[in-house]
Image 1 (tube, one colour):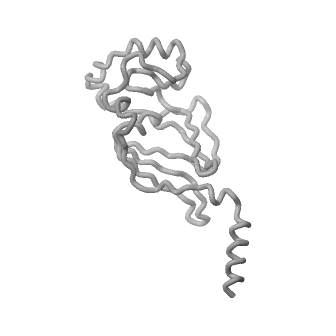
Image 2 (cartoon, rainbow, N blue to C red):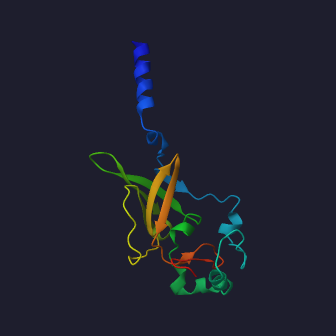
Image 3 (spheres, rainbow, N blue to C red):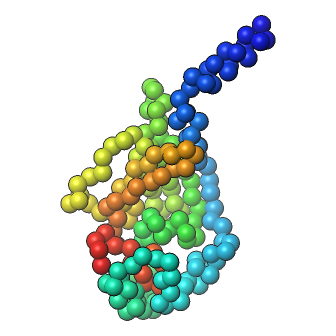
Length: 175
């Protein structure tokens, strides 16, 4: 009987689709770690340091005219950071899954980011991105898919924000 149970288990594992093994549950609470990129995160890079980033002449001009003192102005002190930047900043991150209550199919992965109390949704159900004229937000519109054990996320519809703390912009249009 024990041998039969082993063969049934083995057969069920072989018969399972490969994608069933690929998904990783990221649910939980996560905190930022300041390791080798501490100078990038805390004091920020030097003005003019864009090494390794593919930027346009317009983005370079925008960044070179950056004045960090603008962040002392009241209207800029609570400026929300866009999704690509905020994950590298000071935050507490909580991740949970949204599943269909009947089928348990994964619909979305939700992120609550403590900094500026942002909630980001990564749609996992194959829905299309909205048209270009649709609203742009700080978090953008994200879809995701698992490629092996890696979650690949595509985000569009993000408002203009910053890639680095030295004024280098991340724009919705080509600068």
